[in-house]
Amino acid sequence: MDLKGRVAIVTGGARGIGLAIVEDFIAHGASVVVVDSGVSIAGEPVEPKLAKEVMRNQANAAAICADIAEQGVATEAVELAQERFGGLDIVVNNAAIIRDAFIFKSSLDAWDAVIRTNLTGAHRLLAAATPVMRDATKRGRAPGAVVNLVSSAGIYGNFGQAAYASAKAGLLGLTRVVAHDLARSKIVCNAVAPFAATRVTESIQPASEAQAAYKDKALQVPAHYVARLITFLCTPAAANISGQLFGVRGREVFLFNQPRPASRLIQPHGGYALEAFAQGIKAFEPYYADLATDLEAFSTDPVL
Ligand SMILES: NC(=O)c1ccc[n+]([C@@H]2O[C@H](COP(=O)([O-])OP(=O)(O)OC[C@H]3O[C@@H](n4cnc5c(N)ncnc54)[C@H](O)[C@@H]3O)[C@@H](O)[C@H]2O)c1
Image (cartoon, rainbow, N blue to C red; front, top):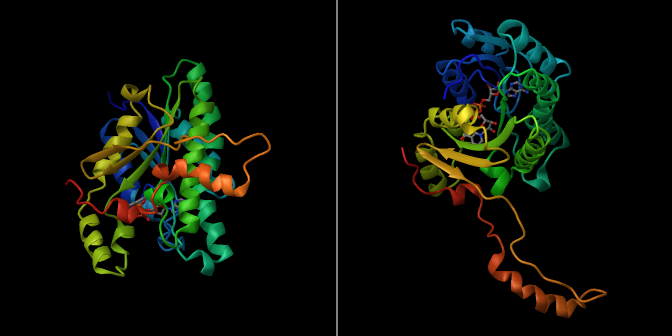
């Protein structure tokens, strides 16, 4: 039921939710390689040595102070896990940055930077790690696990979060593909949409009373509940859970359903004329998804 003898890589593990995951992994017997570039929420370099400083006194942890999306860093992390701790079983793609702007004001640089960290970084690490994890399984090591940190913004959408939400929705797509690709090796891959008080929550500038109330509530939600779900998903007890999308907010754990056809319409041969289309498609009306943002959808009081 624990992670004794297991080796993990956690990106963005030097603070916030990532650090809570690292601490919970170590408390349950794992060794961890942390890859963290020590950047601001927007991705500017501010504390380049943070990962080494935070991990200095932590037994069973090693740190790489680098950008996971940079060429060679993922391979360095995989090699360090093998050399220092004797293998690799678990990958947690947690590193992310945020640069928000309404789509009609968005900059190409912001888009590129967010997609690069939040989506390409995860792909880089999985491309380097999964061959090693598969080989280990073939040699008789217990199958490992991948967890990708997504966001309710990528599921519901939110104002001004084009790049962030697209990267997170892409990461959910990547989760499904990795779950399929690794199914034969019995390595599982799941996505978790977290809610927890971190510097990101602190940085929210409320634009209304409702948002101010949301921020007050969000600041009370501790990250260790997110970590515990992720630890569980990496244990043998969760070996049959793969390709799923979870949420966690304080003591609440959510299982999200995933888009499947909600209704079906068959056109006549040659297709509907537009008027007939308008008539026929009325059958979909009860099934349209509302346009609530994630903040609106999760505006209820968290269970603390
Ligand atoms: N806090 C929340 O409520 C919340 C909500 C939804 C999603 N999430 C997701 O949870 C994860 C953790 O969020 P957080 O609030 O702890 O964030 P945070 O900003 O507090 O911490 C992110 C960490 O990632 C590191 N990082 C950023 N880019 C990196 C890169 N390219 N390479 C290596 N390290 C990098 C940063 O240096 C930082 O230490 C993120 O994926 C975030 O999108 C958080």
